[in-house]
Structure formats: structure tokens, C-alpha cells
Length: 362
Ligand SMILES: Nc1ncnc2c1ncn2[C@@H]1O[C@H](COP(=O)(O)OP(=O)(O)OP(=O)(O)O)[C@@H](O)[C@H]1O
Image (cartoon, rainbow, N blue to C red; front, side):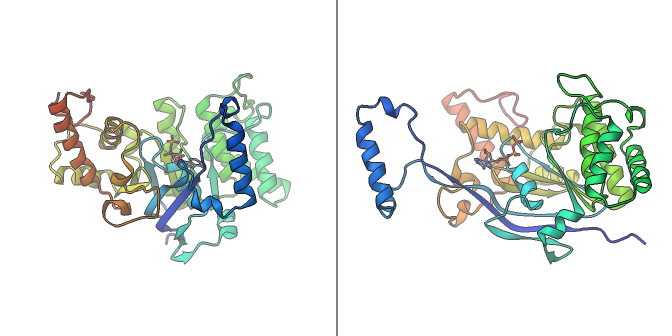
């Protein structure tokens, strides 16, 4: 019988940031500078006056909007989407490093206890933060000493088995290195970073862009290693990835497609392809469906000159409203928009990217 793992479920996660008033960096050269200083002083002395004069650039921005997702044990959930979609923010919310303003996170159907969750989870950041001079074995032993209260003999058994699990036996005695001091390869260094955070054998492993900066073969090896970790130890693995290659996509159990903080799809890659086809989109043969979806979103955003308009993707500079402003923005609506963009382009002659996968301009 399979041992019980951790099912993580996020329901209705909203994460907002508060933008501050943008200051003019050259205001000291402005002849009205004194006037501005006087106004600020007046506002400080009488804070209620702030509400009468709202700052033009200030407001709320929804980084995540009504996000629902589920990650199961023994599986890898990949969070994909264009740059700025909110992938890292979602991982940080799931890991308890950020607190959502609304929504809930459940572990095995029970509201999350952050302190307990920290003990049973590992969080691997995007950038490796390893010391360059210790060897791989020394680095993992150091982490094991910090996280596990075990006698020396058991510690070294744990480190040896971890080195084997990470496929690092051949470099166990090599120095880690960094940009200035040549050590192990980038892919091996990433494995060490993962090892540092799985030394305590967490049930849940959250990784922010574990393949960034790696060549496609090293990236594939890392994801394959994570798949083995999920399948052999019943771990729940949640990772973000910017543009996964075709072979990598096949290793994911399910995928969450994010765009501008809203979920466009959660399910298998095959389901994403089927959904796109159901919408009447003709997918080119042998296309990487995830790349196709991400490139399409990026093309729409580019065409719309920066992030898709706030009303369209459910972002709001104020409190959420109904309709499109509620964050319910489906892939269908998104691709509907792509068709509108095409037609506008033909009519007005704006330079629309011809390499956009669904472009009729080809
Ligand atoms: N604390 C913050 N201050 C200002 N902006 C923020 C903050 N946190 C998130 N954002 C903005 O929210 C959006 C989502 O950020 P996030 O880092 O989660 O995106 P991402 O999908 O991980 O991007 P990338 O793939 O480029 O790492 C971005 O536009 C980012 O600038």
C-alpha cells in the first residue's frame, strides 16, 4: 500500500501588491520644489488630507487573481506561463513565504499550519546559494547537520544515499565552485541546491525555475530526477518553468497555465491540446502545445503593448468587479482575442508578429 503523501490545494488565492506614488527623481531641480515639499509636509501633519488627494500612480495590483490549483503526491505539477505571469508569487504563496490577502491553502483537506508545513517541505529558489569552496559531500553534510538531529554515522549514511539519489557520486569529492572559481557543472550545481533542500526527506518539494540557465539536456536530467523523486518516494513536487521543451513536458503529471495572475488551464498536456482544438484552433502537427500556448499569450501581450489590458485579464487597479474584471478569463476568451487582433492587424496594418503560431498572416 502506498504511504500517505501530501495533497496541496489552493482555493481562491488573491495576492495583491500596493503600488506607491511614483516620485519625480529630478524634482529638486524643479522650481516648484518648495511648493511640493510644503504640500508633503502638510500631508504628513494632516494625514487625512491624503484621502482627499489620491496619488495618481498609486493603487492595488493583483499579482494572483482567484487562483485555484491542486498538487497530488507521487506527481509533478508544473506551473507554466510567460514572464511576469505570477509563477514565483504562486509558489511563494504555496510555500507560506507570502500570505495571500484572500483564499485558503489546504494540506490533505486541512487548513495549512505554516510551522508544520515548513518542516515537511523544501523550497528551492531560482538562484543557487551555495558556498564555492566546500565539496559536494561537505555541502550536503553541512545542510544535514543543520536540519537533522542524527548521530554522525546516520548523518553520513543519509548524505551518501542522497548523493546517490541526486546522481552525484562522480563529483562527491569535487568543489562546488562558482563563476570565479571553476567547480562542478551548472546542472550538477543545481542538483546540489536541490539536495540541500531535500536532505530532511520532505514530503513536498517546491522549486522555482529549477532548469533556468541550463542546457536542454541538463534541464531534462533535472526534471527526470525530480520525477523519480516523486514516483519512488511519494513526494508532491510543484515547480515553475518558463518554456519547457517537448521531452520535459512529457514528464509532468499535470500543468497549471498562468497568464497575468489568472489560471487559464489546469490538467494534463493532452487536455490542454484537446481544449485548444475544441475551441476550433488548428494546432500545427507535432507542435509543443505548452510552448504554443505560452507564445500565443506573449504575442497577444506584445500586440497589446505590454501586459494585456487590466480589464481584459481580470486585473484591476481597484477592487474586483463583475464580468471580465473578476479574473475569470479563460483560454477560449484569450484565443478569441487573438483572432480579433489578427483582424485588426489586417485592416490597420500594425506590425503583428508573423511567427505567432496561430497567425493567419503566414
Ligand atoms: N513585491 C513586488 N513588488 C512589485 N512587483 C511585484 C512584486 N511581486 C510581484 N510583482 C510583480 O508581479 C508580477 C508577477 O511576478 P512573478 O515574479 O511572480 O512572475 P513570474 O511568472 O515568476 O516571472 P518570471 O518568469 O519572469 O520569473 C510581475 O509583474 C512582478 O513584477
